Image 1: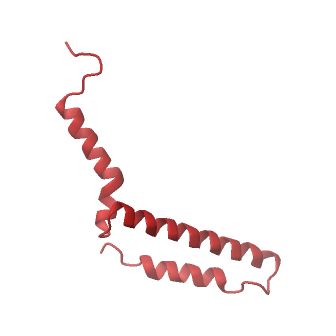
Image 2: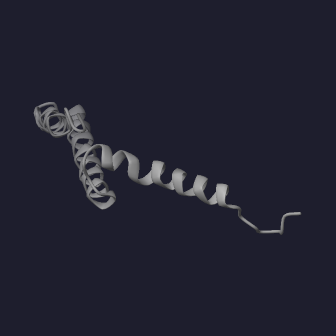
Length: 85
């Protein structure tokens, strides 16, 4: 009979595998640590927010930020293209 709250060896191994898959497998596939990948992704998100803001401004004032969003997207593509290959 199992004790309440008892975790067997298979459950521990399964949990470790799941944590590794969720948090570490992808960063390792692009040759980064968890925190290096976090920093890269946060900067990427910040630049996407800037691009969205530029596009929003451009929507209301067509002469403003004419190429800003597309330049940011091109820069992000160049940074991410062929990562992990």
